[in-house]
Image (cartoon, rainbow, N blue to C red; front, side, top):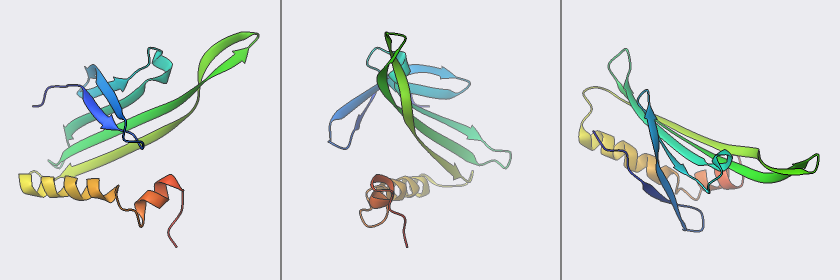
Length: 129
């Protein structure tokens, strides 16, 4: 078992974005990047469960809100105007090897760096034809 710890991730400008542990509830670990106003917390969560067929299921989720000050009746309040949601699920047979899981993670990670298909799909919303 791995202890929940801070994670430093990189944004598109290669700047560090630090996520610190928040909590573990019902086996779901959550880390946050906060500017002090909880409504704007960037969150990442992850968990591992076992399916009824014995597979190990890993679920990763991230939510990145966009917060703007909105004036209502003369009072300015931070408000989430939109959010980006990302999630990934991995499922491995109970007999899978460490190497197989390492290969799956490496291939999945490199998928996001594919500048011919995936980068334009996500960044430019350019569908394949």
